[in-house]
Amino acid sequence: MSGLAQFSPDMRMALLRYTSPEFSYGNPLADLETLTERTLADVVTQLSVRLLAAGRDDDVIEDALVSLRGQL
Image (tube, rainbow, N blue to C red):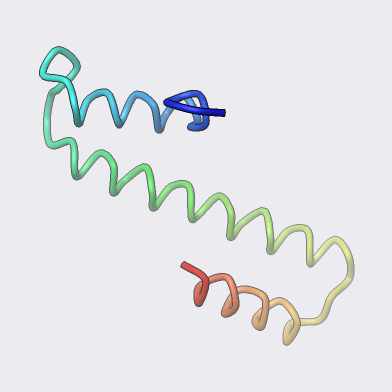
């Protein structure tokens, strides 16, 4: 995959707003930061739900979330 095809539709639009005056409105850096935070929140939620569904204990879930945060 190359170019914008590797990104999600939301990320592609954020990148277009950032790089093109045609699509630009508001604060593109704030839009990108918001998108990043939303994506991170979604990942944390998915990880937590999957671990809970698998019956993992609280310590395992906490360790996984701390590890994820360390990777970011």
